[in-house]
Length: 115
Image (tube, rainbow, N blue to C red; front, top):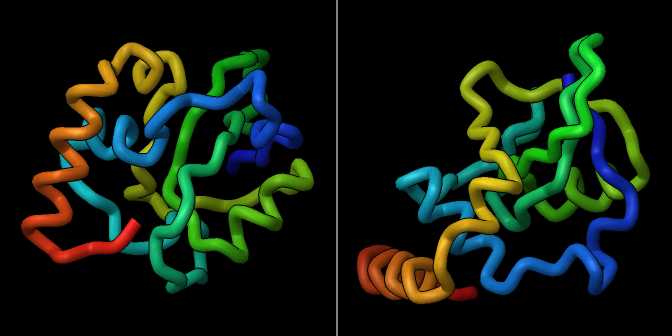
């Protein structure tokens, strides 16, 4: 289980090219939401914290559809699929913008995806 972190859309938490830095670290472009029983398409990288009983303040990113991402902004608990692609926010922050731009350009040329 995880819970969404409320307020991460504030400017102080902004990470340039967040989605593409996440994809760079992950090594692939997710296609669907990571929330159990949701088959929505990947739209956003949601900021979450683990709700596993341990005391940790580590933030992670997971792929979510627009609806689940809006729901998670309210700090709600969510069950993720067993294969959910959690990536540490700290790790994403270390990705250079140039690497994220390269990932984005390769992804768009491979899939003709829109932003």
